[in-house]
Length: 132
Image 1 (tube, rainbow, N blue to C red):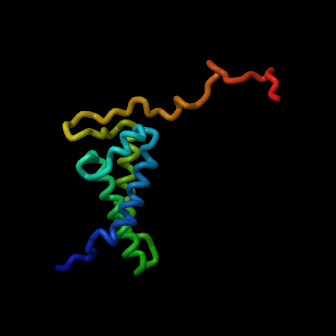
Image 2 (cartoon, rainbow, N blue to C red):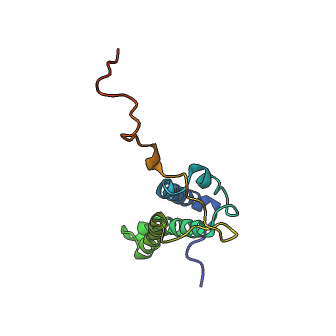
Image 3 (cartoon, rainbow, N blue to C red):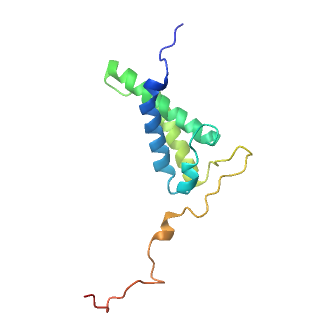
C-alpha cells in the first residue's frame, strides 16, 4: 500500500501556519504572550500543544487535498479538527492541563485579559470634568 499523502516542508507550511494561528488565537487569554511565544520549536512546545497542532495540520491538509475531489469537507478532516478544537476548549476551561517537559503545569497566572478592563474602583475621569 502506498502513502496517500506525502507530507514535506513545502506542502505543510501553510497548514502548519494555520494551526499555529488557531492555537495562539484560542489560547491567548489563557497563557501569557511570553509563554506562547516561547513555544517556537518542537523541543520548547508542550507535548499536548504539539498534539493539537498535529491534528489541526493534518485536518487542514486532508481537507485541502480531498475536498478537491468531492467539493465537500471530508469527515475525517472534520473529526481531526473537532478533536483539536475540543482539546483547546478543555485547556481554556481547565479540564486539560498543559505541562512542561518535567510534567509541571505551565503557569497561567498573570494572563487574565480581563485585568486590563477598567473598573469603577479607580476611574480615570468623572462625568463632571470639563475637557478643553
